[in-house]
Image 1 (tube, one colour):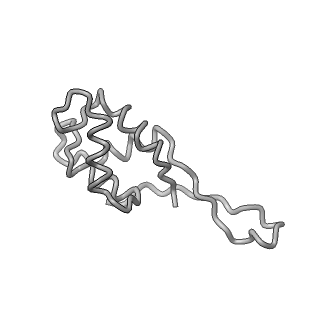
Image 2: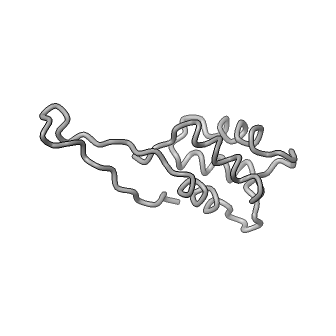
Length: 103
């Protein structure tokens, strides 16, 4: 699955050293929430460890299995091994702390 396209902005073209460089823009809470929800492949309203791993992989994580494991540890407040709609805010907060950006 491809992520939604978000355009990055060119840095001021008047500065010769910065001409043609792109700025990486961090995801917003709303964008991350939408991305995570889109990985609920079975439509049960929960994100499993596998679905989390795929989501973190699409965000560019260098270790998506580890990130999914840690995300569950941080966000799964009832410890049932999956992320519910009520726990999604905790997951988004965790992902925001790790600084994923739109490339």
